[in-house]
Structure formats: structure tokens, C-alpha cells
Length: 96
Image (cartoon, rainbow, N blue to C red; front, top):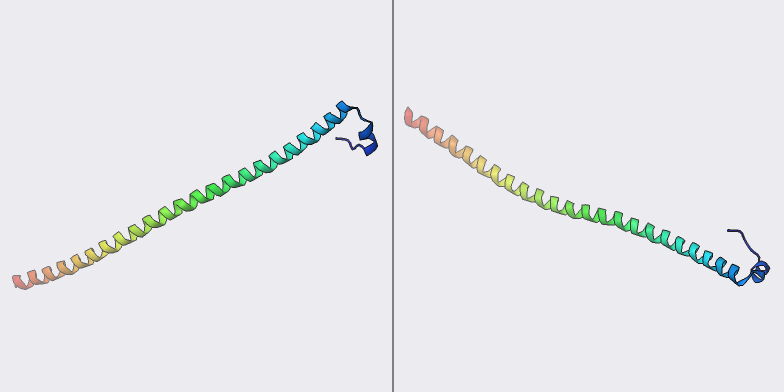
């Protein structure tokens, strides 16, 4: 929009002043809307990251559970191996 001096503004008709005033208000509203859209866009990205971090916490808890189960299973397998070895030794001793 072209720049007007104070004198030009004072000599404008009422309608021209109203149009200029409304144009300035519209430009201001557009500028504010752009700022709001930028903030909302940033918030959406933040929410995506938050959702991902929440999912990560869930995965961490699942991995911890899996580790516990695997550790327990390994202990059971080791115990079975010892028991089987002992039974095999006893069986061989009994056969001879």
C-alpha cells in the first residue's frame, strides 16, 4: 500500500480514511493470524514429540519386562542343564 503523508491523510475524504483504516486493520489481523498459525504448527510438532516420548516410555517398560523374563528363563535352562548332567552321570554310574 502506498505511503501517505499526514497532510494527505487529513485531506482524504471520510470514506477514503475509513478504507485506509480498514486496510490497516486487515493487514494487522493477517499478521496476527500468521503468528497464530506458526504457534499452532509448533505446538503440533511438540505434541508429536511428546507422543513419541510417551511411546518410548512404553517400549522401555516392555523391554525391561522382556529382560526380566529372559533372565528368569536363562536361570531355569541353566538349572535344567545341571540337573540333566547329574541325571546322565547317575544313569551311567548305574549302568556300569
